[in-house]
Length: 177
Ligand SMILES: CC(C)(COP(=O)(O)OP(=O)(O)OC[C@H]1O[C@@H](n2cnc3c(N)ncnc32)[C@H](O)[C@@H]1OP(=O)(O)O)[C@@H](O)C(=O)NCCC(=O)NCCS
Image 1 (tube, protein in one colour):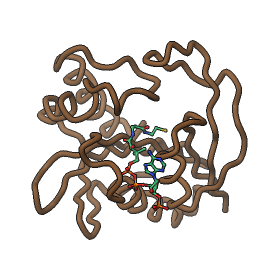
Image 2 (cartoon, rainbow, N blue to C red):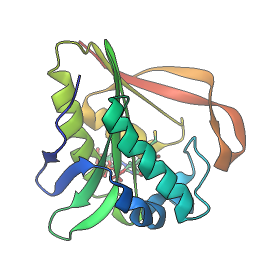
Image 3 (cartoon, helix red, strand yellow):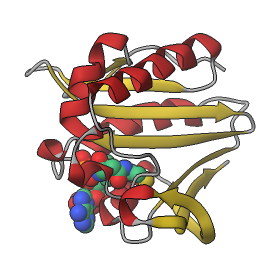
């Protein structure tokens, strides 16, 4: 399954993450305290970490292992964050992260819904799912906006370095055909 490389929404453009995005990835979210708080990766210590991440994104598109889109604000031409789909039929997992300067304006819901609406039309996909920290109200709001519903809380599901959790619980949300 190969999704479109580009999506356009009312305000946003989505296109594959490129190696040259590394400085923006670092300064917008990956090196920042608030956006990385609930994440399962270690906050980037420098642009080199974001360069390694951006290279993995380029490789992921090439191998089809995952599809990470950079989300940019069309009018401002500004990098805002990343939406990623990991498709493994019959299921596909969604992830997203945005810089905190852009929170609370519907941007994550708008960007991710372009990806999820397309994924829902794929014959090979019967489940679209995502996890979030039980206290991550913003992420739960995005998932509900996308049409995913709460399924369960998974104990000991993932490490969260910034919270000091070695095996933290996660809420799983899903859309099922
Ligand atoms: C989670 C995140 C993507 C939300 O981005 P956003 O652009 O602010 O989300 P939206 O504006 O589309 O909001 C989605 C819904 O959640 C609600 N919401 C957003 N932030 C909230 C918060 N802090 N507390 C409660 N509700 C919140 C919004 O009101 C909206 O609901 P509505 O449409 O019914 O009004 C953003 O906060 C982020 O990048 N966080 C860090 C990374 C992260 O946690 N990623 C998810 C990992 S599972």
